[in-house]
Length: 70
Image (cartoon, rainbow, N blue to C red):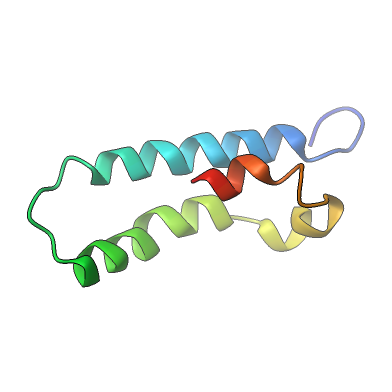
């Protein structure tokens, strides 16, 4: 939360952490789609979804754009 009690900074930070985790998965070669999906849901999704039940209703779809890009 910033000084105006908005979650924009948190959304940007969560998106950048999620993107960083997703880029680490790119280094793994030869994965089947099922294994890649399982790795994504077990490593990237929790990073992005952390505390989302608090801030997801505070923003419309435009503000959550960085999260959707991950």
